[in-house]
Length: 254
Image (cartoon, rainbow, N blue to C red; front, side):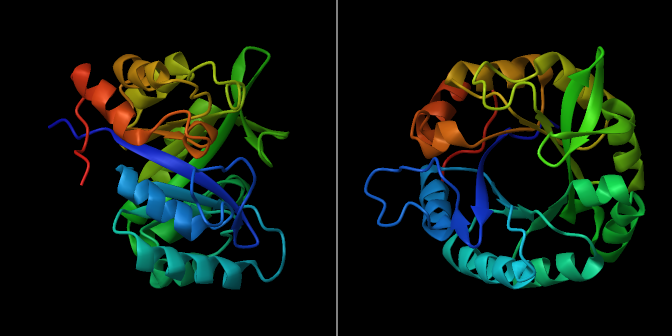
């Protein structure tokens, strides 16, 4: 059975505000992630991802408040990530209304966290986000937004994450991120063919054609982007219309 492809806007949040690069027309407050979430939900986004990049000790409280506010406003699934280091963090966010949680650095530092979360909440709630960069011809897992290389080869780490209980992989190619030159379709295809769980492509979206390409060439389950959506360079209804013309199965806009 072929599942419909998903389009996922991503919002970086700091101290409860969306960070820069957001200028929807007629938004009362461009920095309000709840308002943006509502806007995307109305445009026909299939899901949303919020990445909290706050570094304060108050983080969990801020994230919980954000999740509650978003859950009240939208009826599409959303994932929250950033700073989830233990079961209690995930528990608080899922209880507040998040549909899934995303872990990245914490999983690399402590792979058993994936097992614990999958066991506690179920595989379908656990998204493992992986930031990859090419080093000496190999795809290597990086931490801290792609700044710190690890010892792990990306392909091996993704297979391990799946085995431990990841329900989805959110794969960001840092070499492509922000370039708007298209997704890393070759590597995404390789990963997608090796795992049995959904793969979300991230990093590189610059045009509607980039989305067509990543679905046609890599056959990933979902594609994620930030700035092209925030700046209104790509409108989700337009994007879905073109995907439909290419016979790519999408969820119809509600």
